[in-house]
Image 1: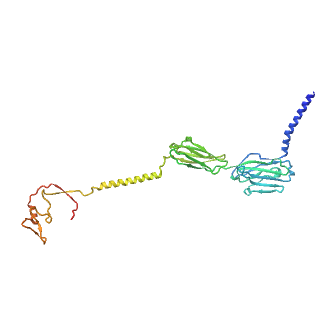
Image 2: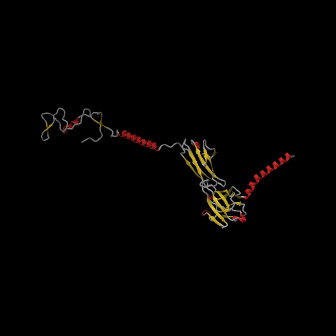
Image 3: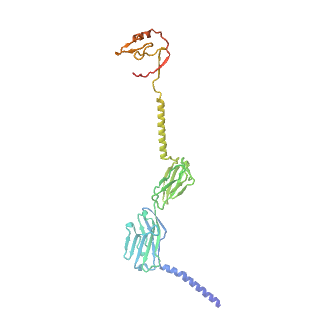
Length: 356
């Protein structure tokens, strides 16, 4: 019996220790300050109004609170960035200090000393997007958790995206299609689709890659040509843009093209000169044939003496003869008329003007 009693006493003692270890922290937590926000995310469309609830519990009876401060702030995008104040409230002075950026747009939904420190925010802008924090400090109640944060998500439909092409759309080249919306919250998701030249939907080209609104096309060819559409969308709505890709043969170097054109011009000039010289070589008038009596020669009485005749002139330029026979112009003409006609052979005669 003694052993059984000792065992029972040990069991009761262990139960007491466990109760003390587990129940005491719960009681202390219940007696410490706690700040809470029901939801982790609050969504609101840009331009609308939103209420961000926040409440607190304290070991100090609310009616007996001597001093209290409430602080709402917008946290930085990075943990190391400082928070920006939305408003500060001081009790019992009932002083409210609002950031000029939120002036006229923010306020409490009820009296903070009642335990409800919820705020309203009107005409929400995209700059209000981000995490906001509620902090409560009560004199003589420093235990527990006195802050809580939530995400204020401002919803903005994506703006019409801009489509662009980076690189040269030539055979064998790599190009990149870009798509970006200037606005959109939450950040838009981008998706590229493409159609062939017959306007038929087709899968992405081989070795293509899509990431953050950019579509990379490797080793493009004529089969890559087509109509590409980018869709930018979030949970509100979507918008799209398009671009036509026409893959062409590689373009020639400008300097090389200019050199080829210049060489062609020079060759044409040389050919033209050669043709001109060849055509103008035999451009004189055609030769004409005259009739001539065989054995007859042109006779000039002043330049040629007659056969068997010595012709000379005296000092007065008068012809004389020294016993030799000569003919004057009248006799020569008479002799020509007395000769019988003969069929002359063809003899070429120059039709050009003779020198006088």
